[in-house]
Length: 88
Image 1 (tube, rainbow, N blue to C red):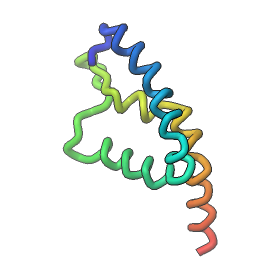
Image 2 (image 1 turned 45 degrees about the vertical axis):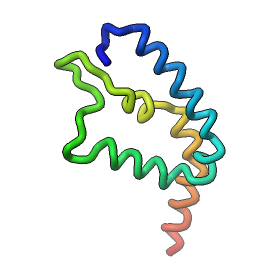
Image 3 (image 1 turned 90 degrees about the vertical axis):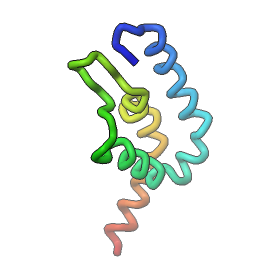
């Protein structure tokens, strides 16, 4: 979507937290593997950029990656994975 499409950007800004809230039980229980796989999918080699400033485009994935609510919901399992990996 283009930067100039203010209505679409506003709708996406509202819908990403709603979707995160709906999927919060899943993210709280299995957030780290899901988020890791999602980030690998977005940043793979042949993937389109999530933010293209030269062309004035932003992907919906950008709002998900930068969402603090999604990061906060994935935090418990990410910290648990770090704790388990440190212990062996």
